[in-house]
Length: 266
Ligand SMILES: Nc1ncnc2c1ncn2[C@@H]1O[C@H](COP(=O)(O)OP(=O)(O)O)[C@@H](O)[C@H]1O
Ligand SMILES: [Mg+2]
Image 1 (cartoon, rainbow, N blue to C red):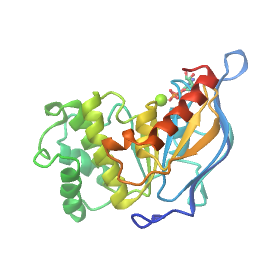
Image 2 (cartoon, rainbow, N blue to C red):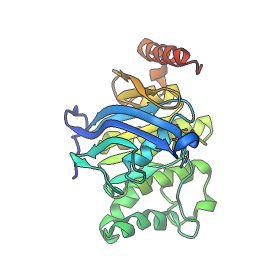
Image 3 (cartoon, rainbow, N blue to C red):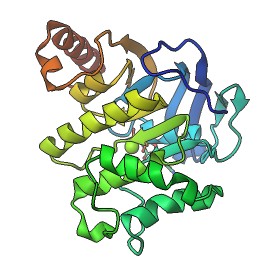
Image 4 (cartoon, helix red, strand yellow):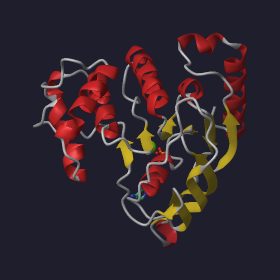
């Protein structure tokens, strides 16, 4: 299942399909209807942002797509196959990274290969290439505690990508970083995506970040999260800092603000 589109090409085939997906935690009086129902189809090679207020079920959805949490209703398919358990051909990243403290940066990245039974030696060059692409050349033998928060998240990107997954689930990976670091990593993330074109589902509550990075922005309502509107972001890639000065960017931003005002969130 190495579904992938050529760099620069437009996607047509569906890769991730949500069909009436909903999640309720608990039952009876204590039940929390967290998410859905939502229908959504994401094409191969797309970069789709889920943009919504805190608590609307974004992380819940990511866990369901990863096969780590079962939906209460509906079905999820990846590359035509029903998701019924943990998926291996995906890369995941969260706001808090999952680097283990006792391994070096390289050791942490290799761990992802070891867990999947992929020969580490085969990917040595790929690891070096990935580290260089996120400005971590020369840091492979450092431990996580020797790195800044931004560098740790960069290492976590390498970890999530080293097995070349067709699908990446990124749950607020830049959420805890300062604005300047965030901006710099956005650029690297976009370059990585453009080079290999994995299908990316990216959670953020930054409107600007969503517009800058995405082919489409799915606006999620307050809990229970629903996707009422999906906005095509028709701006050429790569999109650097200057894209924010364009009238189109402003227009997209205004439209999204309007939707959130309608929800009473802004
Ligand atoms: N394991 C769980 N048990 C009970 N409630 C949960 C659980 N996980 C999430 N929730 C609830 O579901 C809602 C959505 O949570 P979450 O998916 O984390 O939102 P988001 O990522 O959009 O901030 C919240 O109200 C949260 O408290
Ligand atoms: Mg979350």
